[in-house]
Image (cartoon, rainbow, N blue to C red; front, side, top):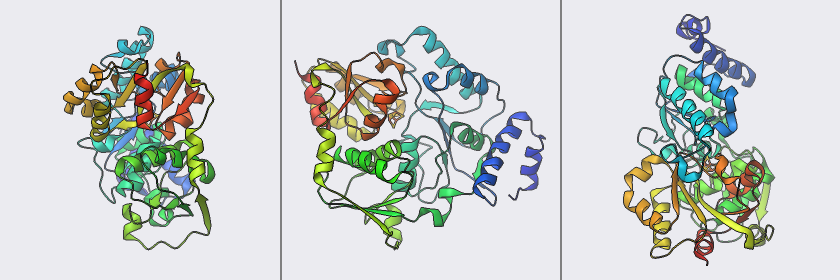
Length: 392
Ligand code: F3S
């Protein structure tokens, strides 16, 4: 792989051990995947933040790094609400370790907001054609597919390396030829809201890491696309998809029709809602906001909860910046007894593990919660989730 003189000096250790390690990681990935060079990236989003997932070994690794990131860089969700972890009944020892992880990242100049929807935040609103180094799989899918930016599905260490160097290796979804659809998916029914999460849950399992081109009956909005991409990235490993006539690259290009075609029928979508195990009578927590809620989603939830009281634990997950910008929505949701939770989520926090059964409206949460939190999970649309939340 071609390196400039400055990059070669970095690789030779002339700018210190941290940058040497960082560029070594980028060059190693570039060599494996056949990159020709390093390219500048506009921002980095770094996974490997929750103490639940990285533990003491991760904390030690980050604490040993020195220097400052060269591009705007932000974190993935942590294991708790960083300002109000007590409302989640987090163990103080866990909270202490989590704070040390955040401080170690902050020392490197990283924005310590922890969210899987960086694209809603000032300074991270990527635009068409931008090269990025993002690692959270739903954010990667949204950036590539809905925005038309370009990022591989980075691991935590490679995203952090890109943040420190300001560059990434030029391979995978940074290249035009890797962005063409490889399977078409025709959906034979109209879809609405969380149906897109159900669709993503089904299709991700079928296509793995291929690039689907959807032919849909309606026009999903950006929240529905967010939900579709997040689910496919979790049940499969889809990092880029297109929707005919909707997503930017499908509008800008005339794609050749992929050889493989899948058809999805309405019964397949309904089956996801009809999971009857676990028993709904065991339902004791409802979580919404996977990926983190947008202002429009918070507004919908606030409207549905207005004048009502929840009778179960209810988490509405969003980013700190969105919660701070919409205090009236947060107040209105919390008046019902539901909790607006920032910086974390139902999957990466250990706080959900004690519940018997969870209901979610997210295909991604449906894919992850049973395995990662060991909590049996039911799927419902947002109306069903709220109905169950307020049921006596
Ligand atoms: Fe975000 Fe957590 Fe879901 S990181 S995409 S809310 S699993």
